[in-house]
Length: 193
Ligand SMILES: [Cu+2]
Ligand SMILES: [Zn+2]
Image 1: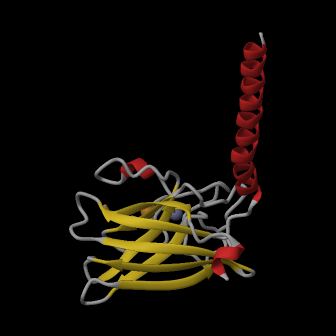
Image 2: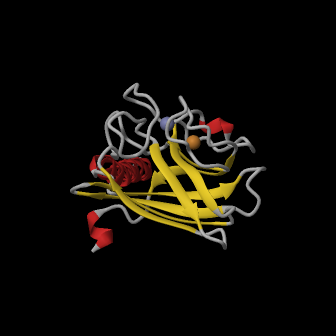
């Protein structure tokens, strides 16, 4: 009799401990969901048309907009269309699974500085004779929350230059490098100090 009571008491204590562990484990999830994203990154890989193309694009929230810093290698020298596309789905080997240009505001295609542009229109990047392109710009049209959030979208580098006028693509040709834009591990204010 006494022994049975002891087991019951231990079981109850065990359940209480499990419940306590459960609520402790959930707390960090809630905190993460409320923390605004301040940094994101897209790691680019070559499509089947992209040869040795690869690179990284880092997006950082600033008071003036989102800073975009790109380092891309393995390109043909010259201009290449540089866009954010609708989907972060890079599963197809031609990059077409990233969809069309990210266009949450229903605008027409244009240059990054044009009054009418897709949110995803970042213009062109220029690769040097070694196939290396380096870009740094700040774009007030991009954001990390709301309808124009670029989180989870796709980053695409094209084979040719974006002519900045052909609708709705800029006629930039094949997709040579693609990547998904994800929240960076270093996104919290504490981590950037
Ligand atoms: Cu594109
Ligand atoms: Zn566009």
